[in-house]
Image (tube, rainbow, N blue to C red):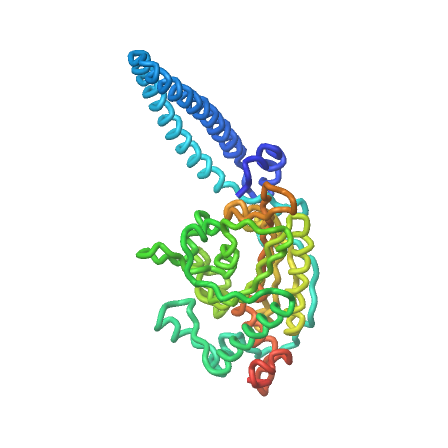
Length: 423
């Protein structure tokens, strides 16, 4: 979330920039500053009364030593009345702090100056595109038809076992999934990312730290008995490794990668490109996460975008990189680039990665800081993450784009991992 000082220093800019994100609520910003003013006043008054209590305590001790018991008792009554006042101020301070936090979590991150205006994905800005469009015959099959034909993916079995959106991968379909995961991880570790195997369940504090809670609780599967959440992305546990941590500037950047299954309820998404692997409730994804010095976070974002682009290029997939407009930009993100690949049989562009810079927004919630050499006061770090890559739509595009009358060709880079060159 935004810091109070940042809001105080840039109030008008924040109000105007958040309009790009379709957050036009200056009253909330005003209420935040009012609550903070009240909290500061309460703290000042509490400190004054506490100092008075300390003075009276010393004076009472001196009076008892002198034998002036009556005066000492009078001061004790006065001290008791002040203690009640202190308790009242402390209670009000706590209430005001809670009200302030409830307001702060409602305010999204401020979009970067380069973020274009717009309402939906149709207003996103094309940055660049590449790859060769496949030339498929008119009788080409979609990935769900190919999955059935070659016994790679069974959607009905998933419905039987769990429900819609939980596909079962079989045989070479399962091996293709495993090959992609291994190849992604090896490419990421070769680029300097440390591989992490995190838990798949997180607590409320972790969900809050990266911004899934309280904003997106309806999108996550909640294990109510233990009050834990199934992760929607590896970003959540991996970034939370550094919650309540003070790093040294020389430790930056921190670069981690992780493979995890991901779980998303996708509430409200029904009817929008939900066929086959286009939108599922459980899927595999490899993530890259960086913790960066604020002065280098946008260089790191460019580096991450380039890294993901090379993965897509190596898979010979037609792709395009889109800069998200304000209306399509995530709540916690300052700047996001989406990667889309073309699935030829569907004649659709499918999102396979989002690469984002959250600046200090997540770090403030996480209390993730770093200390410069020779400095006492720590500063908030910047956090970034990206999919490298999400598997379902990559698999969909690979199957559709590489189909031939003889079978489905496997990209050359995956041959050592699949053990076969064709399905």
